[in-house]
Length: 189
Image (tube, rainbow, N blue to C red; front, side, top):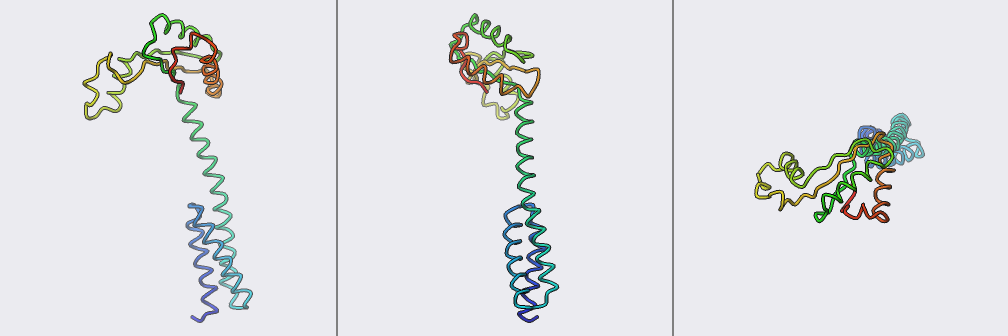
C-alpha cells in the first residue's frame, strides 16, 4: 500500500473506530476530527477518493452521534436525578435536645404545610434499628443504645405531589429562620 492510499485508508479506519466509540463522546469526537482531517488531506492531494470520502462521511456521522450522546447523557442524568429526588421523602432531622412537646408542636406545624401528605416521626432508637438493618453487617452498631445512638430522630415527610418537593423543602428551610417551633430542626434533606 503506497502513501496515497494509506492516508485514505487511515481516514476510513479512524472513522469506523470513531463511530464505534462515539458513545464515549470524547473518543468519537477526537477520532472523527482526525479522520476528517486525513480524509480532507487525501482528497486535496488527489489520492484515491473512495476511502477518504467514506471516511469523511462516517466521521461526520460519528461526530454527530457523539454530540447527540452529550444531550442524551445530560437529559438522562437530569431525569434520573429528578426521579431519585422526587421519590425520596423529605427528611427533617431533629436536635437531640428537643423536648417531646417541641416535637409534637413541630409535627403539627409541618402537617399544616401545603402538599404534605403524611408525616412519620422516627425516634433515635428507631433510627438506630433502621441503620442496623440496612448497613450494619459487622454488628458495629450493637454497642449503641437509644441514649448513645449516633443517629438523630427525624420526621419523614411524604408529599402529595412529587413536583412540589422543592417547594415544601424551601418552606421548611425558611420557617427555620423565622418560626420558633422550627428551632429544633438540625437539618432538612
